[in-house]
Length: 278
Image: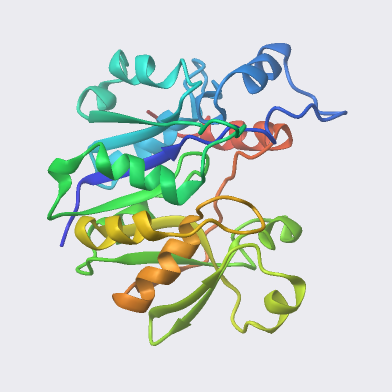
């Protein structure tokens, strides 16, 4: 059940990226972008190409060419950039855009589950199809993306080995922990406590890249409850609910995933993406 469609979640407020970190050796131009642009649009390429271009290129190399970008309401950069992009491969892609609004009385949107819901409702023509979905601030490999895109499963995910996915093991404890049985997802816990993380078993984690079927995903997203601690609708909870109703097939990898979370990540990610030809 091959898919050539993907939703990329770029609606976060980049609050950690906008925190000044003492001792961070960044050019003033990059500091300015980190403070004023969505983190996926920071110009890290040799010609100041945004980080998100490199993620889209990984999708493109895996055969995915139709995208819905979910943006936050304060984003004044992403839509114009992709509508007017001059990169040759981007001209071969089609883009849809959805905006995740910030509800009155809140300072940020309602979370990743609601972001995906907003994205799906912006592309009703995808009904009857599977699609990929991922964060917009992680650089997944085209190999991993292709594995999901060409999967025969309607719903699937990539399980990352927690010991190799990121060098900062403290950061990994904030990822969603997976419980897998016979290659099917059985449970998922977002930001597990220390005891759960220690006793869960094999340390497979989610980096929030999934393959989902439109008609099965949308009603789950609509019914996902707010997390009582973080006051958001979280995609891992939606996937836990979906796994209780449908088979969610797991693929495994020991790959690492460059993660653009804070200003301390910028130099390392920049070094990596400047080796990629676009």
